Length: 274
Ligand code: A3P
Image 1 (tube, rainbow, N blue to C red):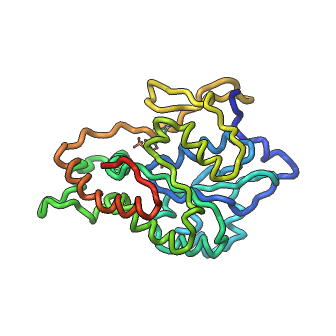
Image 2: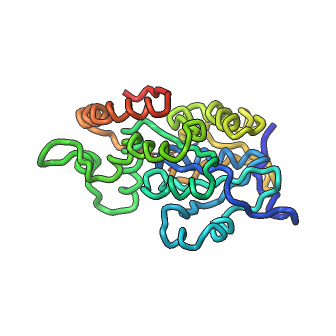
Image 3: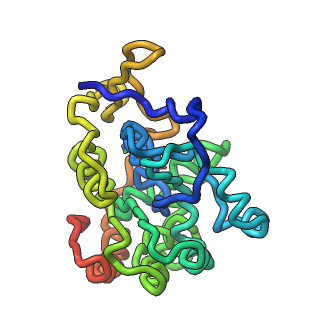
């Protein structure tokens, strides 16, 4: 069976806005939009259509939880409300602020092999500018030949640094880690796990996903008031990555190795990232 995008609730007189039951906190460029889009297929989920940036933005935060609640999608009583803002993961004050709102909230963090995530971040920055330096120029310090930690995306792949802060405020079993690499290849499998974590019935069907050769990624088969169609993520997702100098790739993998190990210990799970 092909699922419908869940947009009915907005029209119901019983629909209301509530604070989220779950937040996708990051990591930027690891597949966060895909997880949110797939969750939108579930009839018992209502997702915020845009990144809310409540906890990381001091101006938004100063407007209080009523303001935050008004940013949430309309939902029915049986539905879980979910928002995603990947900037939460690496922003210092956010874990404490979320814990203050709801210390038993569920959190989802999508991670991806750190070098691929770094390349993805670089490609996103380069896409917004003319004459952007090459990947190698950005990630390697030309004076020292060391990895350039001043380039922010480099640091943002050091997941353990940020995870450490979250674990000061939340139990590990409140934080579900999605394997962003597997999400690309086997979205159904990763989403099955997300449904389990959220206590949802398994309704995101394998048949909903269709591999799109042009896009090179899985897309969704939809059948709703707009008719039968395939829906892929936007053009800004699944961009072409540059070919990277193999020596630089090796240097980066070495650079992340010990950080990866620390992350694996934190989440009690290993990923094949070496
Ligand atoms: P690339 O564009 O570098 O390939 P985020 O949504 O957190 O910004 O993550 C973007 C990444 O999601 C993309 O990075 C892509 O690899 C990944 N992704 C996972 N599933 C995807 C899908 N079905 N379509 C497009 N991109 C997907």
